[in-house]
Length: 91
Image (cartoon, rainbow, N blue to C red; front, top):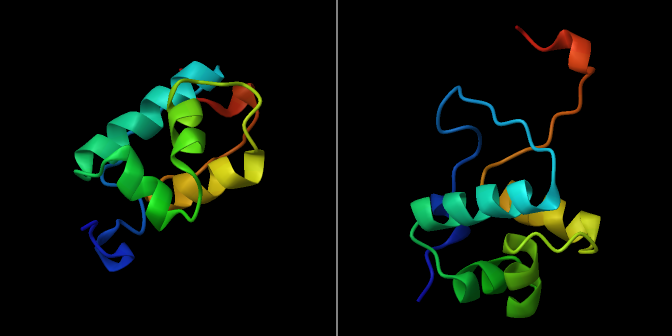
C-alpha cells in the first residue's frame, strides 16, 4: 500500500537546485525523487490520479506529455519549477 500524501515533502529537501534543459533531464529528476521517497511508479500514478503509462513516459523524457499533469506530479513529489532569466544565475 502506498504511503499517504501527508508523508510527502512540502518543499525542497535541501538547498540544491538543478537546471533542467531537456525532457529527459526532467524525467530523471522525477525518477530520482520518486525513488528517494521509496515509491513505485504504480504508487505515484495512484497518488497522482493518473495512469502508470503517464509516469513511465514522464520518467523516460517523452517530450509530449501533458504539462499540467507533469507539474502536478512535481508538486506531489515536493518539487517545483522556477523560471528565471539565465543572466540571473550565479556564476
